[in-house]
Length: 181
Image (cartoon, rainbow, N blue to C red; front, top):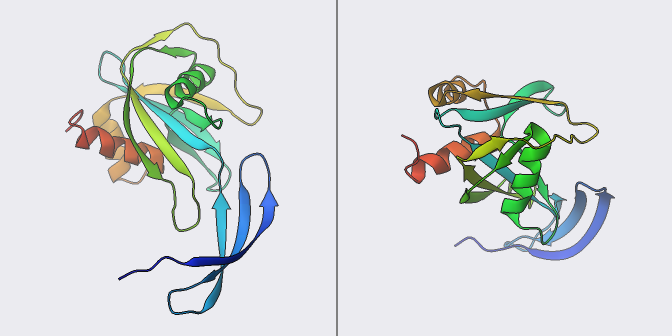
């Protein structure tokens, strides 16, 4: 049976407004000591899967420095501690696209990369958006967006064009909930 590790000591190696990195000395189940690096996030990631009345999905494009590419992604961001996730998604959707969300439904949550981080993301479905909000991008946020046919989105996941975890998890939740086939 797999046993949990025991944290013997922990020290912060780095901290900024987005994340902090800890170096944890742990005792493994066999008794050995091991140093483990963990990226910790105090904020939960939020994302909206938005469909228009024609059944098209909203995808953003944004350059992401760590992978050196312009990627497809869902609108979203980070919730402040204690902030309602649906409200945070409404705010992020408006700030990034100018669209105002109507009814939203929770789809699910997932760990972003539990091998190196404690960060979590939640995904909501929104089929009811209206234009009318004003955008307000962060300093390093240069985002465009458009509507895409769902078959195109699925094909881009299959051919590797879309590799972003939130989009892929959102499609899985939509499929599991019966929203798409």
